Image (tube, rainbow, N blue to C red; front, side):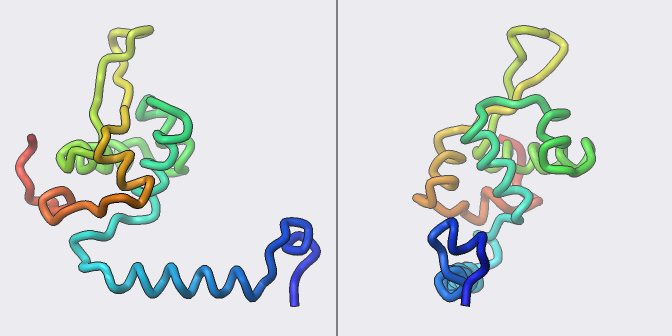
Length: 124
């Protein structure tokens, strides 16, 4: 059984279901210290696909508050997945950049370690 949209995309409901089941199996097997929230992963993917972003743009794009985005970016920065740099077009603003480690997470080549995801990790 497939929907008109799925048929147009060349994907069956069965294929989609199998993909989701596989993802779920992989995700639940990861130790909790290696998991990132979907919002956090979305931020990393946004930075990978769109390049450096201001906190306000990230907050708007992810549909979360600016304080929540700031907390998330701080955690990612402590984990070495992103870094903040001055915006060359506005010295008052900061751009969030994806690091090589963050890009590896997006590619699926590396899972964050406990030190990267632990809220008690000291800033680096």
